[in-house]
Length: 292
Length: 307
Image 1: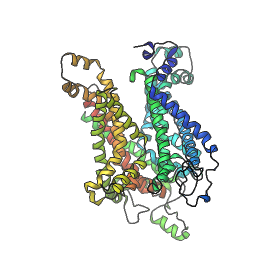
Image 2 (image 1 turned 90 degrees about the horizontal axis):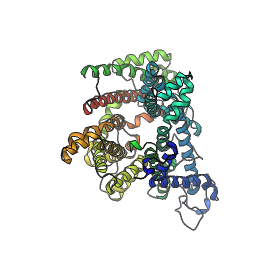
Image 3 (image 1 turned 30 degrees about the horizontal axis):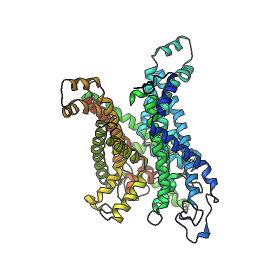
Image 4 (image 1 turned 45 degrees about the horizontal axis):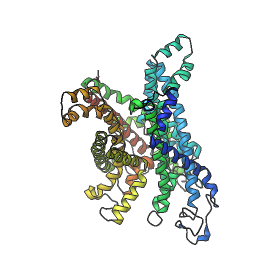
């Protein structure tokens, strides 16, 4: 076994983790594919001469298959709109929604969990009881009610998903904070007279960051899936905006006559989710080799 | 153990009460009402309808009435399905959902655990990579893609199985929905079991058992199986609740008369009582399943004591 695989190469925890991650071929391939998809999502819509909501009447038929005869590289959808533009702008929306929802849920979850775990005792008991109650309320119920209450703006959808998705994060962080609070460096901080808020922010949170990063990479695909489920129900993003889930749901209705409408967005969706999962697994192995 | 179970069972009641209260007021505070339609009703008819369902009374009075009904096991009348009580609606769809969900649960536990253990026992071999690759795709592809594709391929193109329908639960009609429902859970369980087993296999007590010459089969059955199942069991609580409350997508694609659709339809239609009924059903199920999980924990790992 070399030094690198043991994580003994020096340079501290993060450098060692990065070295372990670099040695993981699946995770590195996932990062590569994700980077390509990200670039495609950002510049893709500009590469085509068509707009997201432009209906191309010149083709004679509405759903046309991809063919070199025209500039619709992924064909057109049932309304005659260019699929290449729609797929990449859908990817853009899906990624945006997922990342923002994840950030919201992490912010709430980490703050809640770290506070409960660090303070312990009665505060911890009631804070976690609150989490338990929310856990038993079906997730779907909240999100549907919230999307119905606030209308279907994109911004509120991810806020809603994030606001509900923090429970698991709170539990994970709380467990870790509970273990940390009796460590020497925390006792030293208390002895120095630092206020609780500062101890939580400066000493507890940085020490749970590894777990948080791993969980975040696994939350993003979950949010994408959930957003696509909402779009499938017709509660997700609205026209003329689109998302991968919405495209897949629309494609599923036309799959017999126009299979490319299902296949192309499904392939992109699956690629994004697979890569994020591989990356999450790789990060877990890299940041916490004990749990391999 | 028994007193622990009883105490936990009693603890379910206040939790349920909080959940009922929260769901009741969240639902009511949402704008819109159950009688909103494309055409607005004449005000007198709307007022009569609201009076008939007690919606004209103050919120707190309505809440009191609802709780009083609950004590008698009455979930109230549905606002959208006229002439139906919510309990009737749930009782109608439940056999369908329980059949499909129960079979999917059995299938996913059997296959998921078996595949996960097989992968762990051949760690880093071809089989391991194959199982994990397939499991990842199982997680990555949403069920509203899997369901129509399965229906198209096996139902329409190959014609091996009926593409949709219930037909009083004839076996051929169950296959596709059960498989669709089980796939992601098989995938999760396989990954979970593999990870847990890999960890268990490295434990010193297993090395000791191996050193004293215990055969592979006995080693796995007597020492490795139970601790491997710990995280699997904790995942099974929420998984079973999800499967047994039904899936909107699977029911919609395969045309099944289950209860999965009530949730979303109820929330969109503001069918207050139907949503409440489903929330209570789901919450009670998840609380009881979590209790069951904790009890099974004690059996799997005697170090976990309940007292």
